[in-house]
Length: 354
Ligand SMILES: Nc1ncnc2c1ncn2[C@@H]1O[C@H](COP(=O)(O)OP(=O)(O)OP(=O)(O)O)[C@@H](O)[C@H]1O
Image 1: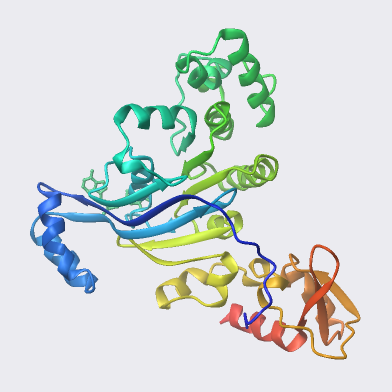
Image 2: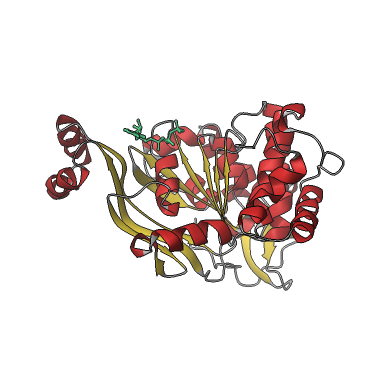
């Protein structure tokens, strides 16, 4: 299906890791050396490591996070998402591999340099909010700026701006214990944004929230990202959250990345049965866009209906149900660059139900 003309432009890589490993156990580096010849046979590798009392929480992960994208690490509990995220920031020291931020080799960076990067370039939000209970909302949000030594009037002005941004105006004087879970996480988000991070790491930020609040927070997060255009690494075990938020997703299992791609790429071509199982919970017609499946416009065709490349197939279904045999697809400049037929949509809808 995706012999499609592409609308995407090449993206700048902000953060990358190459063949990253994190082994837990008594002698991780020795275990690593012994394990290396077995990397092709992951099952044997895991059992050898287990035999020597080691766990590969991250096993040879390689990825690239593009400038201004939401990159989601998704997988079941224990698949290694949090460990990989922490290795990318060196909050956990990887056993081997490379991590590059704007091309800078983070594993070769001094402690001092890492502290500086975490204070100025990286924002972090965790599941348990991590607010300081004895500080007000305003002081919590201003806290990272205080650590940076920024004078009070400037840091409070910035903190107020961030509080406004996340919709908490009026609650500046409240303490964390006086807030709901959703409000507490908004404070966590405002605090992590206060320093204007270049890259934003979020580890299951909404997992502790009720489903309804969680959905509101996802909407809010999408709204914020439209304004801020941050480079984001977002960890979740929730497949629906992943497909809702991600520009690209890496699906992890046993410390390795099993498949990486846009939600549509994964939905259109799951790498194996394990991934296909995840997709059962995903409304694929809401994930796949016209531009993902369009083919070049057939000669002498002039479509009666035209949609934008970013229209999801769900929006096209009513046209097809009304008897439109073929829909034209426009690029941002309004030129018709492809087509999707009713038969193709019907086939995709059928696959989504299987
Ligand atoms: N400090 C540690 N010592 C030993 N093993 C660990 C340690 N931390 C994590 N692990 C193991 O590494 C694997 C990956 O854990 P990790 O927390 O990264 O997974 P996860 O996908 O983030 O899971 P969850 O969603 O439950 O947080 C698990 O098997 C876990 O038991």
